[in-house]
Image (cartoon, rainbow, N blue to C red; front, top):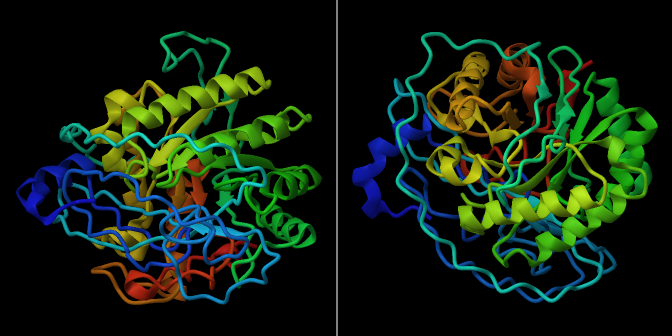
Length: 442
């Protein structure tokens, strides 16, 4: 949480992060009650709040302090039938502003789903998050952003792991976009917050394939995501970005998801996996400290390598969090990734969304010394809601923004998202339910 008493450092934080991302309220979580305070200064963390007791419905799963699935605060949405095992979580998003744009602060809470572990494991004692070092100013912006579209996306291995070892054969993977289209984000949830059936998931993944995408990003392992989405990807010839969600209850559930992925992968499924993402803005949310996240990423690498996986492992945060913790996070990941949302910056119109993403990705790559490929793992524009400065939501505006992003950074961006999420709370600016954009692609 960022306190207003840190206002004196606001200008420095703005320069260091190239913008303020918002608390992207409903991206992967449910609800925005108790939304985090606005973000706009160096990050401060608080001890994670214990999750509520586990429960079989979508309103009190205990997976996060925000909601019932892996992604956010409780939201007033229809409660699924008691038989449902869906949970929801919250993820937040902040965009960095380029130096020429005045720093403004935004606070929106995101919504996401949380997998409900089928076999409870003894939870690990959460480690108290530590305060990261003050952000260091990034290198100056390039005179003119260069397009990432059509660029090489092959990851070179040989990075030094968190434990100090050098695995020249680990973390090597080839990202295979279809021209300027690569990935689309997907959550297997129905409008009421329950889990979609295997047939519904298969139909959705088939549609994403028909839209020209090669890869699907999921955020966690709940709702039989690995099985249903994985089987659909196999049937339709697609790749998968597998996710592990980390909430405020600690890393216990994250380790359960890691084991789910390892066991599933060993069943002949590693050829489907293009990337594994350990945590979705977990440091920004205050769910874990940067050192603890780096340690967990090392565990992920070790466990998955033993299970036969040899592709890249990373995490994703707002750009300013990566910059502030570069010394800790960059050595831990194989590729560097961020969630980049132009709308929540407020300083750019829809037609400028692609330029904003490109400039942020250039700074993202510089944050890790320029020797790790940079990926934008979540980006989009709402089709409805209230304006945020120059950023105006709307059907025509969404098309203009998505067209701009795909044209200039599509080969390294995961477009958010497949469909509107009516189970989410509207959030700040009333936009959180309105990021579905698959209909824009033919």
